[in-house]
Each structure stands twice: as C-alpha cells, then as structure tokens.
Length: 185
Image (cartoon, rainbow, N blue to C red; front, side, top):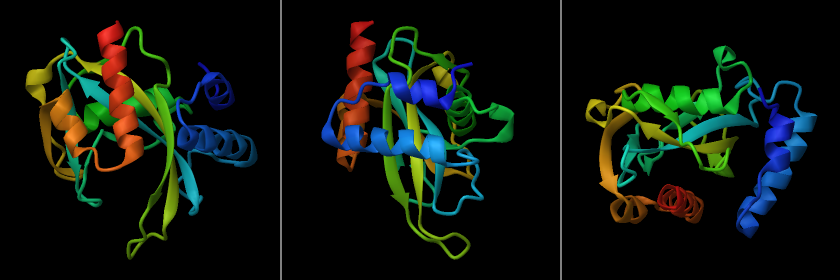
C-alpha cells in the first residue's frame, strides 16, 4: 500500500489552488499524529470519487444532505480503510451510490486534491477536509441509489450537466480532469 506521504509526493497539481492545497496537505501529513481521525477537530484527510458509467459518458453526483449541494461521493476515512485513501474513496463511492466500483484503469491516482472548509454545525466546529480524489468506474450503473443518511438524491448526469452543477472552481477542475482522463483512456 502506498503511504499518504508517497501518494502526495507523486501527485502533480494543475492550478495554483491545487498547488497550494497540496503543499499544505503534505505538511499536514507529516505533522498530524492521526491524519485520518475526526477527533482532530480543525481538520482531517477524506477521500472522494468521481463515479462514471462503464462507457465514461455519464457521471454520478449526489445531493449532499448537510451541505445541500450536488457533489461527488466522498467522506471520512474509517479504521477499516487501513490508511488507504483509495480504499476510503472506493468505500464512500459504494456507500453513497449503491454501485460496485473499481478504480479507473488509466487515470492518475489520485486524480485531484483539494482542501475545503466544512461549516460549523451544532455538534461540530468549522473544520477542514483534506480531500484526496479518485476516478472510479461503476460496474453496475443501473444500481444507482442514494443513501438517505448521506444525501437527498443521486443522479447520472452527462458531463455537461455535471459541470453545470459544479458550483465552485475546485469541483469544476475535478470534473474537467475526470472527463479528460475518461476520454484519454
């Protein structure tokens, strides 16, 4: 298994925001005693996935229950993931879409990294998600279903529809990278 340090060391960012986030993530990976633990209230590493159908023509997005936005599936690392960001992204994609998923054969691993702020809620202070993102393929796209505990819906969208729902630059960057990787290989 690739360590978090090795994973971040080999990632090549594509814009200034991703470059800055990657530098911060590399520092956090070294400094944090428990980089995957939610007990670190100010921030922790998470994993997410752009889920595509086998033909690479559609992308699954979920309507996040707490953030009320259309996003890629993703979330917190769990102990069972064994510190593998790939395992976290795959598990989250399975849980949030109901599909069997596998890593895309030729896409970079990870595809993208991003640091974003999660707003405070009554039981949690504002904190950072240090998100490591992958491209995955749904082997059974007809099984798409949302997890009511996580989202209020899940849909297959064309690339143009997904980009239209991407309401911030890092999410658009992720979707553009995913589309390019699918078309390349």
